[in-house]
Length: 240
Ligand code: BV8
Ligand code: ZN
Image (cartoon, rainbow, N blue to C red; front, side, top):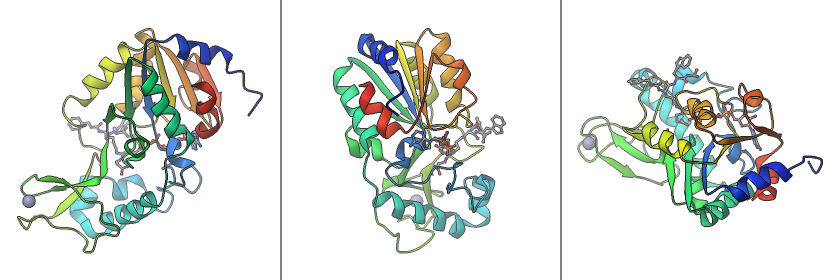
């Protein structure tokens, strides 16, 4: 790791008045939360289509909830790692700061970040399929699957599934943050999922210096200003 030359990205970050950050499951990997598509990934035993879709939930709410219950138990045992803490330091230092995350694990909140755009929702909140009520529920494990709302309706995880639109206005706000940033950090995402991944070229076209931190190559590695290959938990603290 020590052979990475961080002087240029460190300078860009130090000089930047505004910073926007896009994180994916990789930033939580060193906290022990498995990623979706890597080795030992969450999707390995299941295909995304089998679980993270409204059709799957309609077909078998109990199965989908067993998967989310299992993930909630994993995440509940996880702690934010040095990468999460480095982003809190960055928020303290930068006047203009927006953390855009695809993660639903809540580890950025627990680390202490304030300005977080949760593109794909929050695994710690439930939403009623009947009346639309939306509430936090941190019980691990949930006693009964699927959980129900007080109105008697079935509750779903308050996350965005494939084929579902992102929460209203979320992408607009994320694009606004990306265009007003001098530096755009892309951390721990395979950049497969849209529209989240579209923020990477969007930020670049808006003139930001784009720095990617990932243990592997991604479709955007050759299109960013600086691709740092390695674990975020080791690299990020050295950058800020
Ligand atoms: C929508 C739910 C429209 C919550 C998730 C064909 C082409 C292009 C797009 C599409 C297409 N077909 C369908 C689409 C659209 C689809 C999509 O993008 N599909 C992909 C798979 C092709 N998108 C959608 O459906 C979106 N909605 O488009 O709606 C619409 C509009 C109006 C009206 C109706 C409809 C909704 C997308 C949201 C899906 N929900 N999750 C949950 O259960 O978690 S996606 C899921 O993937 C998670 O949210 C996750 O965050 C996200 C992205 O994955 P990553 O975070 O990148 O994680 P991954 O495992 O893939 O990668 C980890 C990375 O970390 C790796 O690169 C690894 O190398 C790296 N890493 C590992 N360890 C470390 C590390 N890096 C640093 N340090 C380490 N230690
Ligand atoms: Zn209800």
